[in-house]
Each structure stands twice: as structure tokens, then as C-alpha cells.
Image (tube, rainbow, N blue to C red; front, top):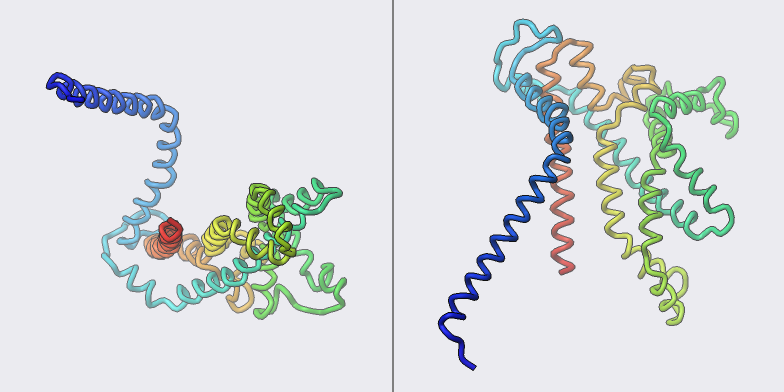
Amino acid sequence: MTTTSAETVIRPARAEAAAHGATVRRKQRFQHGGWFIAPFLVLFALFVIWPLLRGLYLSFTDANISGDGASFIGLDNYTEALDDPLVWESLGHSAYFTLLVVPCITVLAFLLAMLAHHIERGKWLWRLCFFMPFLLPSTVAANLWQWLFNPGTGMINYVFGIETPWLTDKSYAMLAIVITTLWWTVGFSFLLYLAALQGIPAHLYEAARLDGANAWHRMAHITLPMLRNITGLVIALQILASLQVFDQAVVMMDFLPGPEGSTRTFVQYTLEEGFTSYRVGYASAVSIIFFLIIAAVALARMRLLRNREEGVR
């Protein structure tokens, strides 16, 4: 069967017209959808992009909290920050807190999700109890546990028959904040794990039982591999959140850096420099350095996820 010259001309023309029509439809969808996302873009630019650019500018000046007499000083703030021992100390406290919280909260959220997923009676009550602390404001959770850790009137020492100075000893202060954070925030990761568990097809477990797989084999070869992506998400979110720890540390220590500065986090140090020492320019430089650290962690997570997806393909 031969193709005439007219058909040879018509087919590319039709393809070009179809491609043009698809382009027009995409532009129309974007134009209509743009009106819906415009309010978000305006707020994002106003409360995220503009403060970031403003902070970047201030980091190159010696601006104070009054905003008067700021002059350009180049990289002096960044040089001072990199040589400031309190910067590295506070960053170490944030990193130490992250190393304690992330593994514990990941394992605990998984175990609670497994319990809530397999329990038969009162399932809704268990789920509510595990998730409800996450609904509390940070100040409420911090004040509650501050009272519980109080050596004189708190319940922790009374119940366990100990006399540990949780909030006044540098050896225990950060641990108290970690325990508070685990109780307060585990509900979010628990909910992610629970949703992922409910999404695993039941026929996989049925097939494994027919093949003689016990509970441990089903856990190791079905549950954990199917939860790999959600585990990566939980770890990434918890790392980013833990590095930015501030509320519970400040409230539990009565807005002080803790015994011998042992609970001073990076965010707290930045605010101290900006609003206590009134060095807005220097505080802006410190916050930009912290922003770069957070961005590097997020980009590393994205790269690992992309490499994993390419390896699966």
C-alpha cells in the first residue's frame, strides 16, 4: 500500500495542529489555575521571599535593632560567626538533640503504628491517644513536662523513686527536652506510618502465609520494604524539624539557655543576638548560615531519594 504525496503533507499538518492545540489548552489551564494560586504566591513572596532577601542584605551590614546608622561591612559578620565558639556550641546542641530525637521518634512511631494497626478492640481510642499530644501547642506541652520534671512537685521523680535534677543539671536538661519532644511530636510520624500500613495490599500477607512465612519474615520481607519511602520521609522531616528546635527548649528552661548553656540551640542563639544583644546584622548572618545548613540537608535528602528511584528503575 502506497502513500500519496497529499497524505504525506496532511499528516504532519495534523500533528502540528494537534500539538498547537495541546499547547493552547495547557496555557489556558495555567491561566485559569494561576488565579487560584495567586493569593498563595503573594503571601509566600511577602512572608518568605522578602524576609529572606532582607535578612541577606542585613547580614552584610552592622544594623542594630533600631535600624539606624546601618553601614555595609561586607563579610565581617560571617567571619565573626565562623570564629564564634557559641555558634558552634549551639549548633552542636541542635545536632545532639537531632541525633537523639530522630532515631527514637522513627522507631517509636513505627511501633505505635503497628500496634494501632493490628489491635482489634478500641482501635479508634488507641489512635486518638497516640495522635492527640501532637494537637497541643508547643507551650502547653513544654509547661506540662516542665511541671512533671520538677524535682519538688513533679510526678517523674515521685513515680520512679528518684531524685534526678532534670532541668537544673546539664547532664539531664537536654534529655528532658528530648523526652518532651518524643511525647509531643510522635503523633505526626505515627499517623504517616499508620496510613502507609493501611495502604499495603492484604493479599501480599496472605500469599506469604500460604508459603509458610512467619510473622518475622512477613515483617522483614513485606512490611519494612513497603514502608521504605515513608521511613525516608519521616527521617527527613524529623531532621529538618529537630535542627530548628526552639519552643520546648526555651519554655522549659524559662527562656534561659539552660544550666551552663547546655540547651542553647542554634535558633535560640540567633534570637539572643538579634533581640538581646540588638545585633541584627550579625544575627542575620548567623540565620543565613543556618538556612544554608538546612538547605544542604534538604538537598541531600532529595538527591538520595532520586538516586534510589533511579536504582529501582
